[in-house]
Image 1 (cartoon, rainbow, N blue to C red):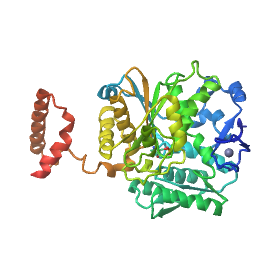
Image 2 (cartoon, rainbow, N blue to C red; image 1 turned 180 degrees about the vertical axis):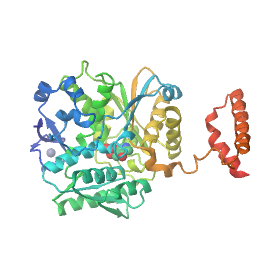
Image 3 (cartoon, rainbow, N blue to C red; image 1 turned 120 degrees about the vertical axis):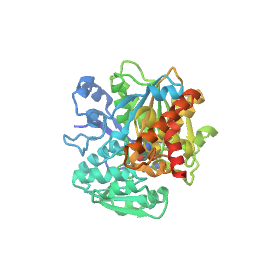
Image 4 (cartoon, rainbow, N blue to C red; image 1 turned 60 degrees about the vertical axis):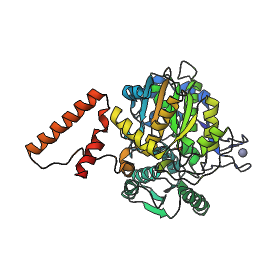
Length: 438
Ligand SMILES: *Cc1c(COP(=O)(O)O)cnc(C)c1O
Ligand SMILES: [Zn+2]
């Protein structure tokens, strides 16, 4: 039994039953799942959560579907890693990385898809479909295979190779569309009325899908010993994830799981090449002007974000901020996170870390705050972004002499750097350059 009381229009407040509905018939506002929080509060305890599965389903009382065996590959309960070396680089104090690269298909989308397909199955759908910037495609194809459902996934034709492979391998239909994500999404919206028997995870079951992102907030609070952080930095694509992270902390308080009312500042991260929300934030307007994306952060390349307005509202009302970063800063930040903490993020993670660095420099994210940065996808998905910036330190003949020769040279270089105080981390790129120049 779930605790859903129904769906509610975010604009006019009209209520609807918990079916495959996503917009209000009266005002076309988006619908939101509402719960009977008194009833949730009467059963949900820290103990009950802690004895649950090590996945998002330990929080099932605050998810929109009750199913003893959900469509599950083990999404969620990913590591929350204390990042002291990165914090020192950025001049911050207590910094944590929520490492969602550890999800089954390597991104946070597994959280939302596991919820969406469990609900879709309950509603009687046999086919899962979506429009995707890549990670959603990976996750829908994998979870559909797990559930024994068919899948139809629409992607822009110019996606990263790994994301295409990681979708197609699961055996569903993969449709590459000659257009941007926004074109793909529009096509998907048209298809939804034509194919009412398909569950489009980010269209007709989007209301349920979106709820999966709340588990980020639930896990962070649990992993911080049942307390909320002061500041969370969240990447923005459609903006859904950011709004649900905000909702999640509020819900834990409502049902009595936290001792103190959370006061979490939420800041949004975008790429310069697709920054409609960050632009509206800095211009002080409520109007999100659609853009034509051009950035290496393809998983965030949504020029007309469905939840952009609500994300902006959540940022502002929490006292957070919003900023955007260049493609160069994204690549630099991917390297910084990898070198300091051993976590390899995709471009969206680079966006988060680069934005964190920028906000730290501006004094918006402060050293006296407990900060969490969401690293939402694995670096192996977007290796193209690093082409030419990383590679072997050196290539040698298979002899001891050759090895000793280059080690002696690199020891000398390192010693030289240590004396002059230069950071040794540039060694790899430099050495590759000198060797190939020979
Ligand atoms: C989809 C995605 C996001 C953005 O989530 P939204 O809910 O669309 O804002 C962030 N990071 C990664 C890796 C994603 O795949
Ligand atoms: Zn309405």
